[in-house]
Image 1 (cartoon, rainbow, N blue to C red):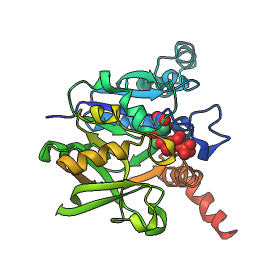
Image 2 (cartoon, helix red, strand yellow; image 1 turned 45 degrees about the vertical axis):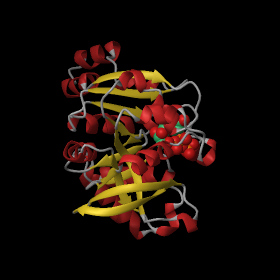
Image 3 (tube, rainbow, N blue to C red; image 1 turned 135 degrees about the vertical axis):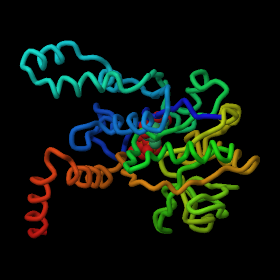
Image 4 (cartoon, rainbow, N blue to C red; image 1 turned 180 degrees about the horizontal axis):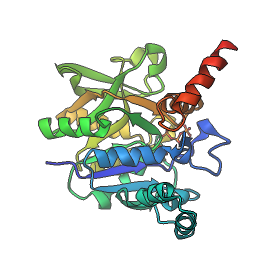
Length: 289
Ligand code: UTP
């Protein structure tokens, strides 16, 4: 079955990037000239997704404005004959078929995904974490959809994480199937050192079967007192198995300060408008470090 729908949870509090995220959602923080969430919507569209649901909350309506028309701005750009900018601004509002839903209480990623039950219905769907921007030649969500369509099982986007960092993520029980593709039969969210099963963790993307909603309905809070999506995926992995795909793209964690800086630098040095000036600046600047 083809994956047609995507959910982008973007209702977290973003405490790791306060005070920037106090009134600006972290998903709206820019990488050079585009907010993080736009990169994610573009990835979903490039992956063949037809319908997107963004999970928001109070104070995040600026995301809806971003993907809406902006008549006053458009008129001004037309009048001043800045047609390239006009086209770009209009294009953002036509990117995708996007709906929005508020998560009324910030009870965790699993709870946010469960808000999408009616939108998703009875088909598999992609989850693109709203603060994980992933950039590469083949869109990461597409790589996961391909694995879903091949194996017919839930798919997790995974990466190798050094032992000292894996406690911040989750740890997966994996068996290799083919190059960069694994069978996943168990997982533990935020493992203690003695619980580490492997250095593979889920990062930023997954494809889930609709059966995840029944699991989420009954799921008690897990690590940090939040309803954890990983705990629901653990049940799926144990019962029917999942697939892990080491996606071939670079992930930037826009939920932490270093991730934001890395994204800015790495996208900046490739940006058609500023790449040359920015590289020249960086080369001089590193000499002062
Ligand atoms: P994070 O755990 O990184 O988000 O969730 P957070 O809670 O905002 O982060 P910190 O720890 O306070 O800095 C990953 C994604 O899930 C969304 C977030 O917006 C982020 O895109 N999320 C998280 C929700 O939509 N709802 C939640 O209740 C929690």
